[in-house]
Image (tube, rainbow, N blue to C red; front, side, top):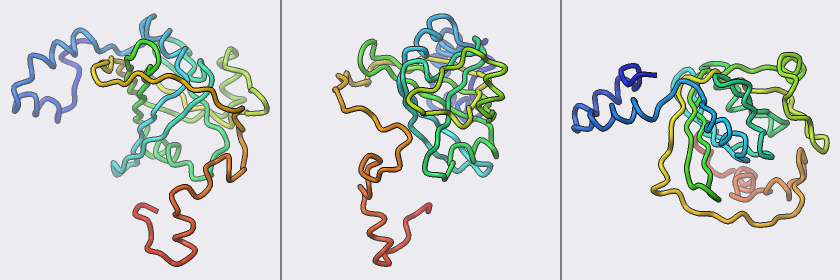
Length: 209
């Protein structure tokens, strides 16, 4: 992907206003691809968490956290990846946004080893698990009864580095066996922020609810 094809109108305007156009052009030319190269594919394959950004048709944004065993983000080919959607709280905020507005942003960060990140932007669509397995037979298999109800398939438009300058070095801690798919309030965090208790006593509505 050439530098001339990168960047939003807003980016370009601010680059001119603040005198960063030359630096931005070097970044576009040297760091931004419209696919995953071999090293990016290897990076995606060993990540066990991702941050997913979506927005509805009005531009109202939402960011979600996804996690799984390394490889849960499945590289189908250099231009396509997919990640699973499991049974959750039933709100389907990210999927609802994708239904209205297919543009998604994925941020992967290696906090433990290389201290580097990868941005992946693209256009997403929702595909049921059985349908995708017919097309992509090497999708990760279900584990411990945790079956993906559907997948988000992303056609990649941009892939580029997130620099390590401010990424903290985190050491993974051992934790008890995870209760995948559970409805246990304790395992899910209960009413950690007190919102249920507030609602029960007639407190003010929470913004965005």
